[in-house]
Image (tube, rainbow, N blue to C red):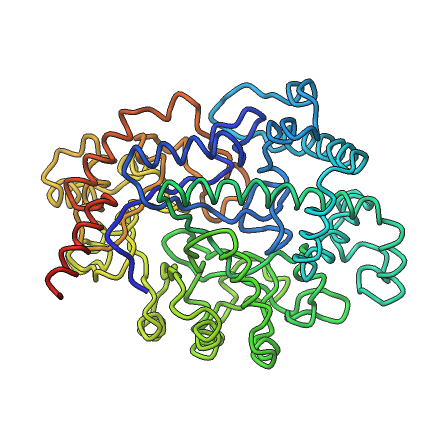
Length: 509
């Protein structure tokens, strides 16, 4: 798939300036769509939106369910599921950070109260039942899993009573009965999440803004995915991993990254026509217009680490599913819009797999200034069919990057941009926009010129990530005007793309 020339912004939903301690799918998200339109942006890239308790969107407890944290409480009050007083009591002062402890406590209490009021009212019964029926393939397992997490104080599934943990027929029947009311409440949460998401999707579509979602390569061990489909992962009979995931030492981490999630039994997936994975991709495409495939290189070969290893250095490369997987994807989705996250240790075999299936890869400008003119991340090395970023959620902000860059990197950056290094974030965005890459995307932190304190994630660091949050006053016309001006200068505004297409059609006629 090849994108039309355009631009976009990365900002996770949780980083929006919400009133209840975290960004949400209500008014803050709708306002951000308006901001993107005023800035001439055609894409909004987000991180995974699955449920998690610690803020890390790449350790979700389900590939299909939505995070309760992202539900707008104000919208629930508008529908009558909560009172205005209940929502007001959960207000948090605006600050540049998410307090996940506060959000976890308040959301659990309020969503339980909202579910109770919803079912007592009898409102929307048909809509709720239709939703449960349409989403039953994943919703039934998720609702029981989430209910059991509440029942057992948040313990991981392998510490639950064995009949439930290992999903015996008797155990499942017993706990479906015991936890029926809590499970119903969990279904309500998903019903409201998807209602609100669909509203945001309609708003974005009407404004001409497409959403770019993200599918993590792996799923957390303590997830409904693994609990409900243990046979598709390399686990022992008791559910403990045989091997775990990670990546070898690279730019981000000297000892590599020990992710610790279970690894897929790719032979089992292949034997089933990759049905589980196709369903996973279908779930993200239900939410978004484009999907970024995280850690694309693992489909060619992945880093497998023995369970119990202390660092990822002890791992080895193992062959991935490769062309067989993407043939199944192509058969199911055709020329579906996917972006290959092809960063890290990328070999010729990985590049060839990406190119055979015509997937646009990624270029990151922060990586461009350490290797001289040979760097594939320098704009002179780009193909058209790629997506250029100033940085990703795993990078420092551009201001933070420049402050920490080596003298050699700073010198090359200054010479390449013909600047003195001041306003480096602006010149990085300008470089991305001026490149031949079809799509240019920048983090909101770079749009605002923020320092390292606003960094989203530091790979390998366990604490202090995923917390940055916008303040309402930071969404100003000045930054939108800057993006729009650059977009117009370098032909990335939506109307310019349409005009070019019309000219091409006229010439062809």
